[in-house]
Length: 128
Image (cartoon, rainbow, N blue to C red):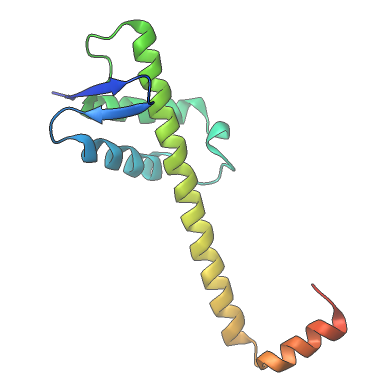
């Protein structure tokens, strides 16, 4: 049985009833990483099928519909989408930082030039 959640429409915050708040946020973050490919530049370009799958998975754990009216349910889905977009952005950013760090480490190891030599080359050849 899905866990109930309370939704505050004014603040665009989803709050789970009792001790479930942290689980909701974690679930959204984990499912974004597991169900959505990181190949999209931003959340707005993620296919609707993947977004629908994400909502379906979340609804299997949390009761998003409850006794809400259709407008309230759409607002809840919009907030879930907003939260998923933030998690996707953080996921992509973390991947980029890890990739950048690996690239920098590879450059330092493969470059036999000292810092002064690199500065001289940069000065002579210009920025590349």
